[in-house]
Image (cartoon, rainbow, N blue to C red; front, top):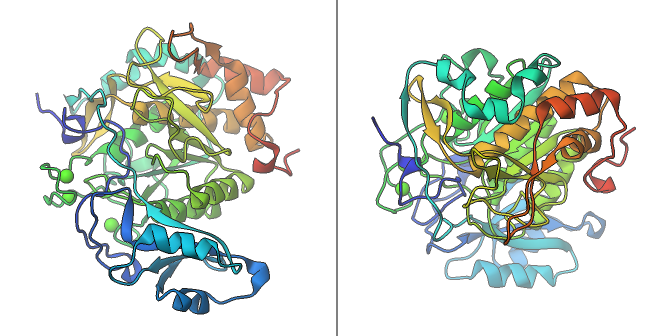
Length: 428
Ligand SMILES: [Ca+2]
Ligand SMILES: [Ca+2]
Ligand SMILES: [Ca+2]
């Protein structure tokens, strides 16, 4: 039995985008940055201009001595700036927020490894795919009753994560073209480079995470296509600017569902913008609620246009590590989940990172069964058919997904739309 780095007792099971050490990003000329181990990239600021002000990013950034290095997307007035050496990104953000030409500015936030988390217990599961189909989670969510109604055909699910093993036998035929925002290339391969990029004493502890998450989506929605978008390196490092780029890319390239098994504790204007943008383009977003056993919101899970998913244990109660609170929308199996893992095999893993893709697969089934439903009604079918758990003393009940019931509700109605109106204002 081989144990996996991301399942280590030293590391969080959810892949919160971690940054703690100097690293060089190859993407689009972004420079190497040295992190203090804090919660944002110290040399970078995200700025959105107020289009009504008609200012150029060159002028606005020059006024504070900063340098624009990347635009979020074509025609989008959101930029990543390098701040001058010695300047404080948080202070510079505050100064920019006082500029009437600026809609908002904020540090380029990193998720921190949550302290005192219950740890993943995971292990290599061999080369045989057979245990996937018979694992207890499939009965818990009534998967096979649901698959008799829908297989997710024609739906694309973006998986924003560490990438994927592109030639994994369980996944290869389901993969659609994706993108690698870490290395800025078209091959979002989950790459372990042997380097401990975040200086936590373990190299590539997040390697395999995106492959595992992708396998869960494929188990639930075998007819759906998977679009791998790599935003985290194998040490789990990423930032909100890159995550926002991937969310926009997914929405602009036809993703119907977007899975985000990652997060940060910092509320972010940029993530709120990007997730609303994707929802309004017709993508339903699911995000891991985090493994902190806490009511503290994680983002993007707690953003308004995203369904936050926490973890259930085998008995259908909220996992002891799973985050909770009114911002958590759904709960799905997240303990000892068996799924694809490089190289070419399978592994068990535990965490809300594993719960979110069960709900993402469910969204694909609902969308495929009734392509006329907009994101608020797909969400409404999922939330409205969920079964409340017993209330835990500290956290209240959680809504446990029921795939068969959600497909029945999508078919028969009436569906009460979920998510705020602004997430999908033109939905019929
Ligand atoms: Ca690559
Ligand atoms: Ca590494
Ligand atoms: Ca590391």
